Image 1 (cartoon, rainbow, N blue to C red):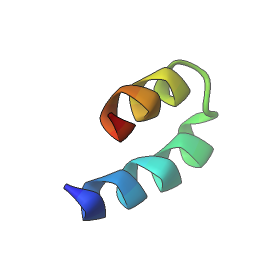
Image 2 (cartoon, rainbow, N blue to C red):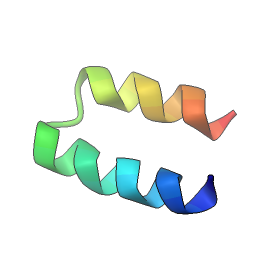
Image 3 (spheres, one colour):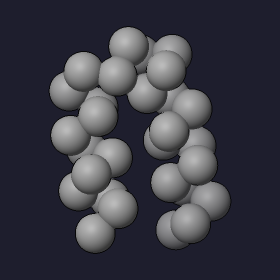
Image 4 (spheres, one colour):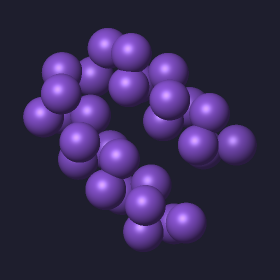
Length: 29
């Protein structure tokens, strides 16, 4: 799961980091 977090963070930059930013926060928990 930790690896997924890193991948999501990278994806956020590629996608823009708008709605995904909120998803990352949810995954952080």
